[in-house]
Image 1: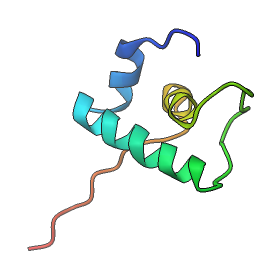
Image 2 (image 1 turned 120 degrees about the vertical axis):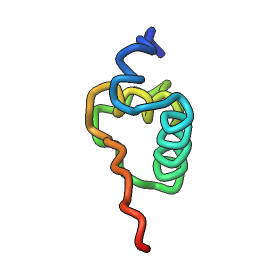
Image 3 (image 1 turned 120 degrees about the horizontal axis):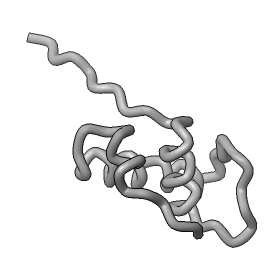
Image 4 (image 1 turned 90 degrees about the vertical axis):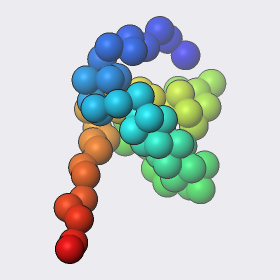
Length: 68
């Protein structure tokens, strides 16, 4: 895995905690046979691939509105 800039990753989300949730959910999707959105490197693990997809802007976090 290449060096990922934390600043770039945090620009995609509002907090580090949301970033962790996004990476974990996408990594689970990738390990359960979901196709990667980008070119997958042979040595990349699911977490690495998820981080790269977030860094490239292929995955976004959208907050749902609360229903009262």
